[in-house]
Image (cartoon, rainbow, N blue to C red; front, top):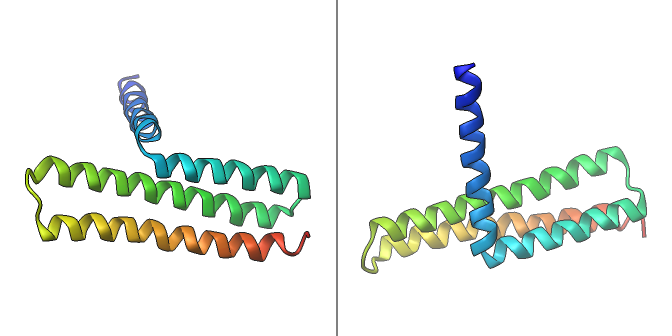
Length: 117
């Protein structure tokens, strides 16, 4: 039972972090809105199971990267009280990772949805 309680506490902490990021991060809200639109389009167009797998995995990776980006930004802000070029580079690099995946997800979406349109 102790292991189950510990697991549930960790799960609660993870959800707390996700909800905190959704409340504070505009880009995460934008990604979530885009994900909802893509899911709605997928339902409407009745895309294949394989296409669902690709879309859902793509959505999950973008949102996960945005959460990691938020964690990196918060950590850098906590550690660095003043501006530093390496702190900026760390934050910019994390944001760049999100941008790369977001751009890839748009291309993936185009490739999938053009088959149905």
